[in-house]
Image (tube, rainbow over all chains, first blue to last red; front, side, top):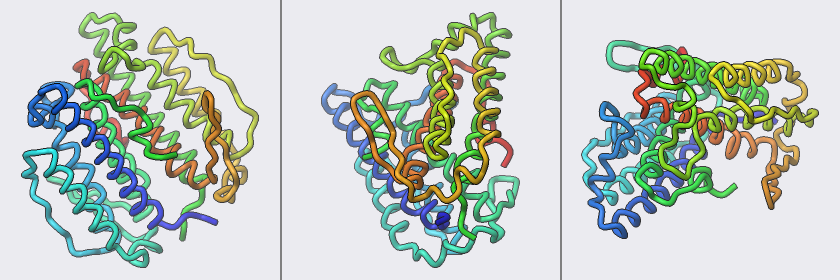
Length: 168
Length: 168
């Protein structure tokens, strides 16, 4: 049986955010263990002109939140980008998961061919519900979770592929 | 209308591999421009004990190839991990795209609930067709494309999110 749009969004985002939470737990434990200021780790980048670890977590959360909001025509819920600690990043993830868990399946299923517009600074990008999920939301979500992983890995945090994939 | 399994695999892998090809083109042009040995860039890692750029490309290709092979019960096609140049990496990607384009839709659609076993050293991981795609193949595929992106980005190659996402 073909796959419903809800199953291509909510459970995959929750799964990925739980993995991201576990990666950050390992990052915080590593910082404590090595006597590294956790803020230094949160500000890590791969190169100077890049958004740091904190922003990767914010983007992953916002990609999940924005996708279900657009697909389900839900009331947008703003989350301020003000996190200053690993605990606050974990709280951002937890609030995003609570929001995702509250999305009714019937708001998402059947929206495959609906018009969905992504508003970015200076442009509006039109999608169908399906193309929005498959060509933007999922690749973008995994991009930011993987980039968070890469930043932790680069810093020496003992994370592996299974931490990213979650239980398979 | 719900989404068929073919549409969750073949076109998404082809799209991602084309983006990866474009990222590598920018990497090769950067190396030439800056007088960097392209082999040095192919061997880039984020930290010592990590698989380099070349392996990330091989893994992305093999995730796509292995997924459709398992789902469609197709004859496995081996590709040797012997690439020594950007041209050879591009050839690996091109051969993988040709293989994906030849997969008949009817081999993939309807396999959502079929048993699919992933064989890894020392273990066999059971999935359904759907869970294999959603909880392993897509996250793993985007992981390796994003990690290739991260390695190029870290090296200073002028790549941006749109190069990764492809035309949206």
